[in-house]
Image (cartoon, rainbow, N blue to C red; front, side, top):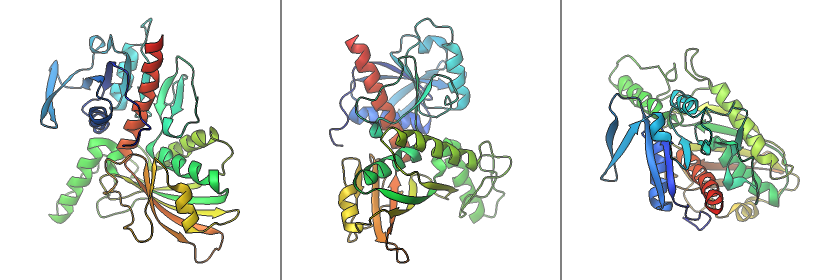
Length: 346
């Protein structure tokens, strides 16, 4: 990884939901990039006071979610369910000196102090109020803010359209399990599990979930649109894209099909050169296009298959991919880095 991420200051950070997909991703990011961070994993719903799990061949302890395990933390990160997030917030409601809060799940977005964050795309010197709840933006909005922020800086856009393909891992471990169970069930002619999507997602594309799904695809689409608008508004006047979200039958990683029309189209080669940067890897026409599988563990986004629109001389097609969990985890760590650095100075 390039030098855009500095080593984090030392201090105990409580991870509520340490056993979730996001929790595990945070642990991987911290292991490789932030070796000085002392992570305390909390948030299990089990009755035991502590649960042992494994990562990288080493035992990892995950403690119960209670007030005692939150006290003393320099910061608290939310990476689990909505229930665990709000339970932890209620525990800290009466604390005189509440630690900084970083929400990687967007479950606290409706709180009055919530501020949408994505340090990868924020202008230099960007700050929020000291008592803010730092809500890390939706990963699709971070990926698109990286893309459009870089693109518009070099070549102003007239309009753009984005088709976003959602992976099952955005619904957590339950989403992965349901996609796997449906795939096995279809191949063995068994009844399909539909608790998460309330529809068949295996071998299928969805423009909306079933009526009984815990979360609607339309609400997720609106969140991406809202967060992208917030992020791009901080970097200057950029024409906002039109978005459409679909559920893809894939386990992990976002894919984006992007159509962009320019005031003056410079052509695919010039656009490739403009996009290439520390957080945007560009694949030329001679290279294999990026895939959602191949982007796993990758920082930023990968762009490829940049091609002229045959029916519109001023427009170009792009294909982009991003690791949804890695984007959120790394932006969360960047928020923590700034918070703990400020505390160390004070």
